[in-house]
Length: 195
Figure 1 (cartoon, rainbow, N blue to C red):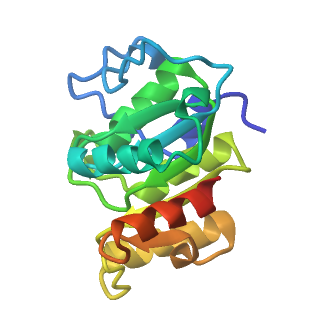
Figure 2: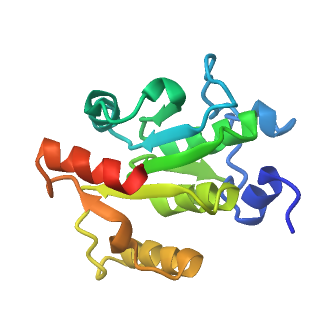
């Protein structure tokens, strides 16, 4: 049994010595990828939205807020929206230890590649999901992507297989495509899947 999220992240090599001037190597709380969330309440469950496109994160948050079916004051909303959103997420989890994330909307592929001592490293939504799932096996989530999930593309096939190893399910069972629904249908689908 692992003793901490730091140990879990280390055993999975998510950080892969990603120091490259971004971390002062004096402990996980010094990771400079971590975002600052000043106004969250650990007694509230968290909803996370992660996509390397800030506009997508914004309208997904609007979907949750404008729906009216839930009171968002009962939740902490965490968004990660840069091309390095996976690293921002990992650094933030290491910084705060537990954001009590109960629900998540996760993009599949991200733009940011980080140079490490082992070469270029590019994380994806399944890497992010793996950490969230390790923290909370009851996580309610969906993948929201514009990627057509072509299994003939090597990295897509690899991430789909990784998801199967984690959950014993096909990733497409928990996925919606960015062009699949109208706004109202998308909002209904997100609400049904997460709440």
